[in-house]
Image 1 (cartoon, rainbow, N blue to C red):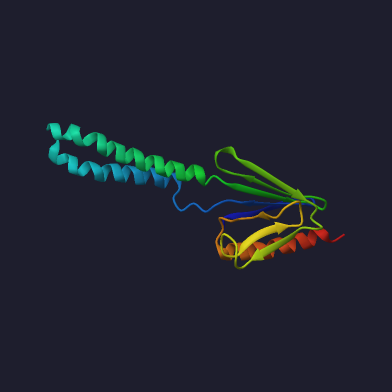
Image 2 (cartoon, rainbow, N blue to C red; image 1 turned 180 degrees about the vertical axis):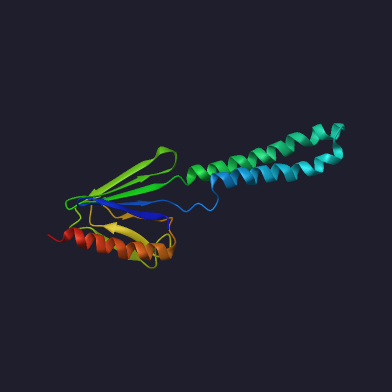
Length: 163
């Protein structure tokens, strides 16, 4: 599951959320290497001829384009949402791609986790309301994961409200 409740530190609870990665870095290397190898197979027939030099720049550009696209995908997926919950403050920090950072905080007594089954940008849209504005949480999670997280977060907020 691409989220994890960290072990509590006293009365502080922390939750980390991140997008699921279907292709790890090592897999990217294999994918680019396989593509380069398969592109090189037709070049065997033109080895030693001037045609090789005419085709080579286009084939190298294709491999470089695939590398650039996969690298861009990795950079865009470098998202980490960090939720810190204490008895007097709830803080959500979203570390986005390319260093973008967004912060939100509120009093947990007034915060409520709301699951919107319809009408959001994604099915079962999860938001935290009760602060200066509503914020989304885990938009990159699957609908089932957002439903599970909503349940867990509601319990965690209820625990923090107890004296």
